[in-house]
Image 1 (cartoon, rainbow, N blue to C red):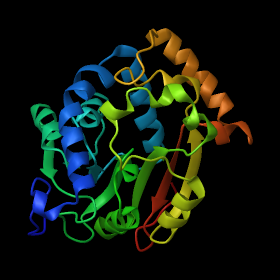
Image 2: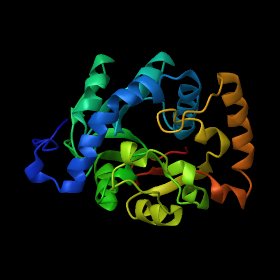
Image 3: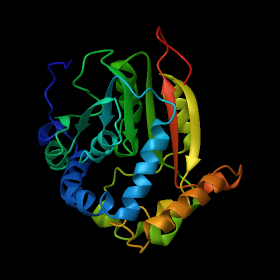
Image 4: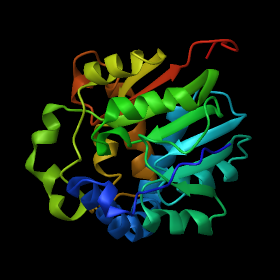
Length: 265
């Protein structure tokens, strides 16, 4: 169910200048996401692997919220895989949501720090690369916990603040694809923030070689799907190394809201 809360995301009087810049940027890059990032075969292969890893061990049933659903490509993929999850998408960008609606995804335009849903509405929340766009991250995590049912799970993935992110080539075209709000996160700080609202049941670093090739709209590398599969398998091994995993581009965690209905992940 939804609460009577105005979307407000396109009302510039309700947003700071930086937040409005983020909305404008997401509207502008929506076509790049739809045409390049999630459609180039090698990149799509990686992002599908990424989402499946995030969802591994979580219930494949119930009503789920995809926070920052973008162009709706996750809904499209999960539907094609026969997932039994019912997915509702929310995004701050109307430009992104236009693509999601074309995929017959149920979507709402809204702000992650003021979710337009009643308490305990969802069995799960998926947020792939969302928190690092939001100035008030703790408020967004609190909202995730609020809309989860007792025993519900949230699975998140964010860019890791690692030494590799200082390399010059990762900043190429930054002015075209990143707003001033974008930042990488310290895993320990993110874990503490989430643990203030939910119990973390899984954490992992991921993404080294394959990750760098998964964003053709930012770094146009020529990679075949077969090569991407090989890079993914190599990355899975490298990400298990205790020291080396600190250099991974990203991390993910799954957390459960305490309360009745808890079970093993």
